[in-house]
Length: 201
Image (cartoon, rainbow, N blue to C red; front, side, top):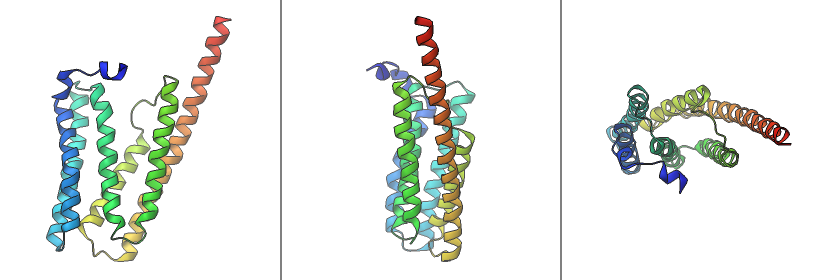
């Protein structure tokens, strides 16, 4: 209830949040276009939808920061839209690309860790301040690789495997760095709790 009380009706119609709604709506559009695609131009249309989604992702963050439109609702739905878009990309590609399931496993492990670690720290009234640079780089590489794989389904297997390897390396780097960040945050929180106890005593 406390979380809901932070939202206002005005937040619903902020431009960054509207752009985020558009990203949600583009997910089924992309999935349907890709699954039904048979010819090169049809795959390019699916890729175009992903590109538009990426542009709206950039714009909602830019507008929110530039014009001071950052809201609690935006903080909640923006990462959800990101993860659902990324998940839709991997899931549709798993069907057509042999080793994509390995990337899917790594992606799921990363997201599960972020979810569990985030919930653990939330109980301690602590959280990471925004997306880290390595997370942003990993996301950029992810979208670049996915765009190529979606656009060119007949891409040579060796090239596709190299692209997935690069993408996997950045996802793994992001996982390792986030583990480090959460360990540091946890230690900092424990240290603050110890100081508080000593002060009270």
